Length: 158
Image (cartoon, rainbow, N blue to C red; front, side, top):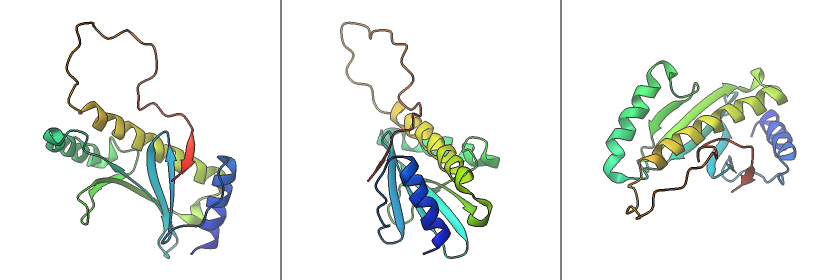
């Protein structure tokens, strides 16, 4: 494992108020407001971030995949990350990487934050594709709360 990556993860964990837990099979797993993501190195000097976007409504899977592929076009809707289908599980996965030598502590934190924000948006898009519950007799109350997928730094380890 790369010592610079281990150091960045330790500082990230400390900054987020988390216990610094060693990776499992070379992957550190975190969750920010329910958006689970992994961090790993590749031995070639790159750090990789990845997270899965569940298909909330199987009937709308093709529409979500189409939207993801359109967002991949010149990264116009991915925050610089790329969508792929995990060949082992079929899960829609958001992936990005950066050279470790280009990342100091603050740059690493910003890299993770940008990725988690993008992951949260796409999880929100997927959640929005869930079939609606049976409508009630009363209309839903108006709310000024932020959308479900709005990002707030609330990291936890998983």
